[in-house]
Length: 313
Figure 1: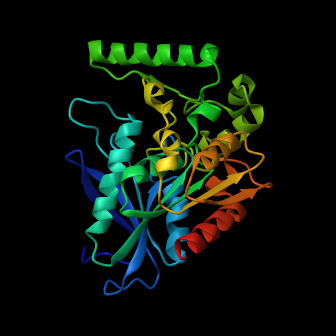
Figure 2: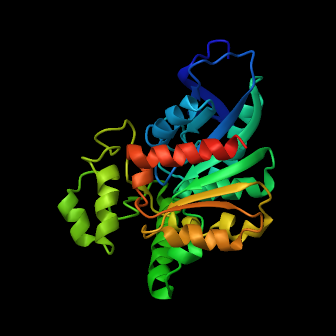
């Protein structure tokens, strides 16, 4: 702890008995004798800390906050549990990893308050974690994927095959002891943009997705260490369950929801907002899409300014 300095610091903290790898971003004028507000960051599926946290971490540190981004259990630089497989980002464990990240921040003597900031699936993680973790004092979501019903439960003809494939993958892994890797949203680490867009149900979102996650993307496998679009095949058994949405009326912390009105994922935010009972603040922006908030400077500036203002209230 005595070696912490302004900027990015590589840290570890315990969760499920193993060391999760994190990046702790500290303000430029960091002084360990002072007190700061800290943010636990939650990233989109299936991201590692070199993606969204590496964008939002420096931005929030520049606004005077401490920001912790980390690789969840089985992702990136964080190990899987003994006998389990890497690239196994499971919803319930993401929540517990987040609780442990909050615990870690709570051990730092210069942290006076902890907030939660989630982007895309990270929105669901933060919302879910905050339901019963009141050490998190405020939460903010950006392009949040909180509402599973509004975006993922699109009829049994869609969900039944997804669940069946996930069930079969889990059974196969149990019987063989080997990982069963798939490309959950249809994009593997070698596909060209043309291949991915041609096969996609939502071409516009597919183009946006590839611009970020593709092998030639801004934060894709060819750019960010350990980044991969490949994941354990039973993910669908948990991704369809959104605790944050189901328990939205139980969230007591002040909440900020930021989303693009033209994004195909907008119902994930609007459906969540409708169920909140804590008088949330909402920033709905017409000109930015879902993925714009991941990395485009003008969109990131808007979201991080709004989050900073909200957390400072």
